[in-house]
Amino acid sequence: MERTYQWVSFYEALADKLFEYEDKRDELFEQIKNTASEQPLMEYLHFENKEWWDAKNNHIDPFSIFAAFNRGITENNRTKIATLFASLFKIGIPSPTTFLGIPVLNNMRSFYSGDDDLWELFVQAITSEKNNKLSDSFSASFNNAVNTYGNGLSSITIGLYWIRPNFFMPLDDNSKKCVSRDYGLSAASVQGGAEYVEYLDALKTKMKDDEKGISLPELSYRAWADKAPATQSFVGSNTSTGEGATTFDGGTSRSAMPILQKNIILCGTPGTGKTYSTIQYAVAIVEEKSLAEIKTEDYGAVFSRYLQHKEDGLVAFTTFHQSFGYEEFIEGIRPVIVSEEEGEDSDTSREIKYRIHDGVFKDFCDRAVTPIGGEKVPNRVFIIDEINRGNISKIFGELITLIEPSKRIGAAEQSRTLLPYSGQNFGVPDNVYIIGTMNTADRSIALIDTALRRRFDFIEMLPDSSTLAGITVGNIDIATMLDTMNKRITILLDREHTIGHSYLLPLATDNSLAKLAEIFKNRIVPLLQEYFYDDYEKIRFVLGDNQKPDDNSRFIIKITDLVSPFGDADVDVSEYYETNEKAFGKVEAYAFLS
Image (cartoon, rainbow, N blue to C red; front, side):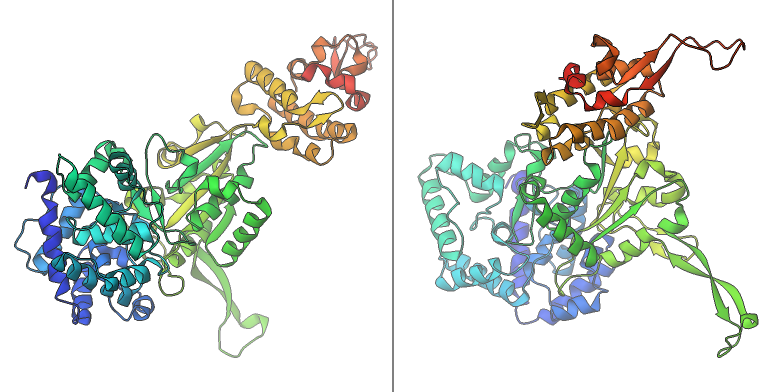
């Protein structure tokens, strides 16, 4: 068999070896546990978590063993783990070195749920392949496995494909699209075992009649052949159905896919909804949904779930500032007052001692590997508001390297560091997502810490006038007014100092002239004063004052006919500017803004 399909015989041989452990599950568990203790690439299984594995009866299913080298890691690392298994189970077939066309699981969800159901499905699948017939028992076990929380149709069919690639077809997104395109078969109706059996029978019949006569592995390879290497797909699970294929391809909107970047900074000008959006991002990550799906929901409902996730410890929030340091973020020492002698409570009997304490991020990471319900290790989100206001080198210290996706615990190049105070060998778990917000009006992206820039994906949030569509005050179109002001600011200053749409959103519920006047007087004009450092001539350009016929409707008035308040003193002042309070309450004052 050519190199492209070198893996097929190895996968089948490994499945045959695991089949022998149907009645020796305790022995299999110990063998995998011992192997994992010597291979850092398998630390993600957390065998040290006794409570977790006790809940699983200290058993590991065959599909989860396959998942150890069929997840989002490099081909070199996949080969390393496959070679370990070849030695452990005495497989006399060379380990695969290429894995083209094999759908894999997400690193965060690279194990299955439901020990007994999965073993039953595994046995039924191997037996069915030997008999060349899918029985009712197979369909029943298929249903049980798919419906177990944390699995799903995609991941189960992918597992079946791993153990018998010439007999089963995976139902990942790429494969379903390919079969639909080339053979006219839709998998939309496949919900359980009976439908999957019918789907397989129909597919195999059509493939037999196809003059090209390709195999299922060749079909799977074809499904991926049109995809660039960067479009590798990872199949994960969400909290509702346990299923969800995530593909990276040019034809799929980023927001329509689950969020995959570990480190994100939402950056933009004031009022573009950065902090508001962190709530939607956090809920999408924790619940493993796409951002687009979350945005279609009522924000109040999303916010309620966000608060619950915070209460459950899945989300944490902090704000950086100039005094924030390593000791508050990672770890430090803190003074405590203790009694010199037990039982003494007088002031003179107390002394100050110092104890090591965890910072907010380290404490969050230490708890991040804890499973929920004995089965699932959920995504967790750490939000850093105003991330650019802190001294990044001082706050992150050596962790600036460990937050890289490839350096996370369980990733291909996982790394740990020895912390200076506690001496703990610490690493950042792979299921911890970091979301920062950054006000570009405070500090340009080009000026922030280079190490931070290289380790975060920056998502720009621009003023969105479409959120103001249909809002008018008298004959003033508010969306057009915002676009006009921002175009002028961009020309006179830059795009990083535009005005965000949220400043004007209160007009959606109160579109009175009084509310508009309040917003301009108390928020927009002061913001422009900050932007232009009191260069009132440019502020007048932004507000359209230079186009108005007289001072009655101008927001900023230039005073030139001075009566010197300094007497006969020689003071070189020929003009100054004043705010015209009355103009804010006149509709005509806003005429040159729309």
